[in-house]
Amino acid sequence: MKKWIAVCLCFLVFFTGNVCLSASDGYDILSLQQYLESMAPATLTTELNLDAQGAVLMEASTGKILYSFQSDKKLYPASVTKVMTMLLVMEALDSGKIAETDEVTASQNAASMGGSQIYLEVGEVMTVQELLKAVAINSANDAAVALAEFVCGSEMEFVAAMNRKASELGAINTCFMNPNGLHDEGHYTCAYDIALFTRELLTAHPGILSYTGIWMDSLRNGTFGLANTNKLLRTYSGMTGMKTGYTKEAGHCLSGTASRNGMDLIAVVLGAADSKARFASVAQLLDYGFANYQVVSRQADPIAPVPVTKGKTSQVTVRVNESLSVVLPKGKVGEITSEVVLEPTIVAPVQAGQQVGTLIFRLDGVELKSCPIVAAETVEKAGFLDYLGRIWQRLI
Image (cartoon, rainbow, N blue to C red):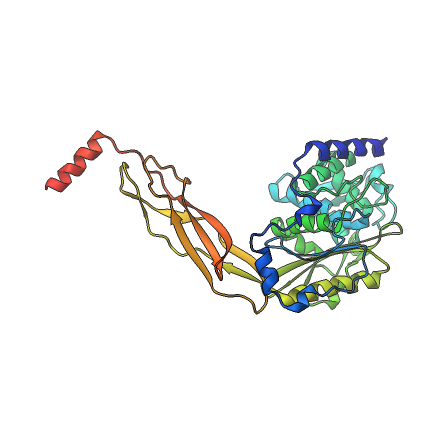
C-alpha cells in the first residue's frame, strides 16, 4: 500500500509541479558558453575514463557543469538518496522546527529496516544529533526512517516532502519512494539531480559538513562505533562529504564534495562496478575540476547617487545587491570590466528597491552577468511647498 501511495505522490508532484529544466537544456544556461569553449585548453575536451553508468562534476557556488557523462540517465541511487534526507533534516534544524537535542523514539517501522543500520530497538530513544550522525557517517537506514518520521510525522509524508523539494530544485528525473535508498523499482534519480540536491545541502546548510566530515565516532555511550563509509575523507585532500551508496541493483554510488583554493566541487558517480572504482572515478572528476578551472569573483564598485526629477530630493543613493561569480578555465581569464547603464530619466516617486539601472560585467567584451541597480531609499514626489522652498533658496 505504501508503495502505491508513493507512486501517486510522485505522479502528482512531477505532473503538477514546476518544471525548470529539461535534458536538452544542457543544464547550464550561460550566455558566454561558446566563448568559454573557444578559449578552453584542449585538455578540457578529453573524455575521462570513468567507471560509472552516470556521472557529473559541478561547481557548487554557480551550479556550472564542468563535466558530465549520461548525467540525466535514470538510475537507482541506493543510499545516496540520503543526501535529500539530510537536506530536509537540515532545513528543519536551521528553521528551528526541530533541534539537535530533541529526543526521537524509534518506531516499529524504523527498527524494521535492513541493510546498513545502527540496530535501533523499538522504543529506543536517541537525539536528532545522534541519528543524523548515524545517517551521515554510517549510512544507517533505520536512523534515516526515524528522522523522517520525527520531521514529518510519518515516513510517507517525508517521502512526499522529498519529491516536492526535488521538483522545487528543478529535478525532472527523480522519484523517491523512501528516505534511505533501500531498493524499490519506482525509486530512481540521475547524477545531475543528485548534484542539484548536494549543492543545495552544501550551500544552504553548510552545517552538514560538521557531520559528513567526521571520520569516526560512536553512539550509546561509546559502545557502538561509527566509521565513515566515504573513504576519500582520509585519502583525498580537501574532501568534505557527502554520501555513499550501494545495493546490488544500483551498484556503487557516491556524491563527493571537496574544497580547494576557494572552490567547492561536487562529483557524483552512480552505478560503478565496485567500491574502489567509485572512489577512483570521483577522485578523477575532482582532479579534473581543480586542475582546469577556477572561480572568479567581482564586487560592484561604488556608484554615485543618481539624479531624480520632480522629487523632494534631487538625487537618490543606489546599491547593487548582487556580485559576479563565474567559473572559468585556468589561465584564460582576461580583463573583467563593468559598465553602469542607468534609466534615461528617473522621475519621482521612487521606491526603495526600485530598479533604476543595470550593472553589466564583461570579459573580453563578452557579457558575463547583468545585475540590477536599485534605489537604496524612497524619494517622494515633490509638492507645491517643496517647489516654493526651492525658489526661495535660489532667491536668497
